[in-house]
Length: 432
Image (cartoon, rainbow, N blue to C red; front, side, top):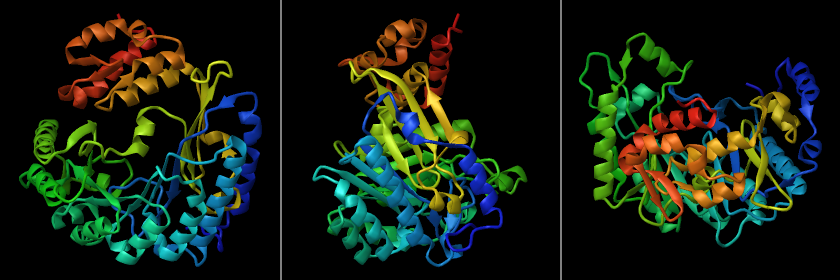
């Protein structure tokens, strides 16, 4: 693994390659009025261990050289200082520290990180940090609160010991129950992540529905926000190999639909509303940071492997979007810590208005609120009804129009992709 103190032998070669493809951010941003991002994502790509289903950018903390965590925090600060000067950022509406597992940094290193970013906080901020139960204790919770964090997102995935072994998931999830109580005592909001569609032993009866429902029941009366993600088997992961060789099997589409329907019903009975395809909350407790993504707003991501999307607007019409810029930080940890401000042209994409328009439609339709028709009109100078009239006619039985918003009805959220295929086809001029 690359580290600050012992770079791999190819570091100098890779550094030269990065510098050769380096794009000067000042030149990229020149001549446009850029929307100042109200949301910040901080990527901390370290974990206790790498789970068998994970393809995220993550490195095992125990294999990092001494001083790596502190060097990484220094790089984050350098990178953020640069963007503050470029964009004129003064404060954020939301901050989200994810990964990886940020809590593995430990209280002392986290305190350094939080102390720096607290100057960009306000009294109204939603500030979330992801954590696993085994790497958080009451002292850390108090430290997080004292530095401005308002929300803890716990990665539980499942309480089932058998399913956790299949996923190669470390730790004792039942520690989360005590941790949730401690977090509430500290004044922190808590969200939990669960996985649906878990694998089973080939030839065994599929119990994924009962497992997921029991997982929900374990936390439903203890938190106000639950993310229930469908397990995705990513190519190249150990889980993918186990499925390919027949050691594990996955539930079929009919089972997944039955599972989601049952989960919706159970969560509704416990006061949760499905406000996005994979997210449930009690009224008023929705995640504001993620809402920024779904509203297709400008956001800044810092850290190795972090993604940013910046929107350039008209100087005469501040809401009119002219184009966008999306870039991803290098996943080479040593390179990132040496050149945290660099933008690699290989990992950068210019976004045309047509692309941004489709993304706004796609992201908005993931949510119960849907897409704001007035904001779409302001941004792109067009009405959605003029852009996709045939699709809207074809799907009229599944659509909700209210208060200048367009949304899929609740029963149709799980077939969003079919709707989006029709939207894209018509927007590109291909629908008959």
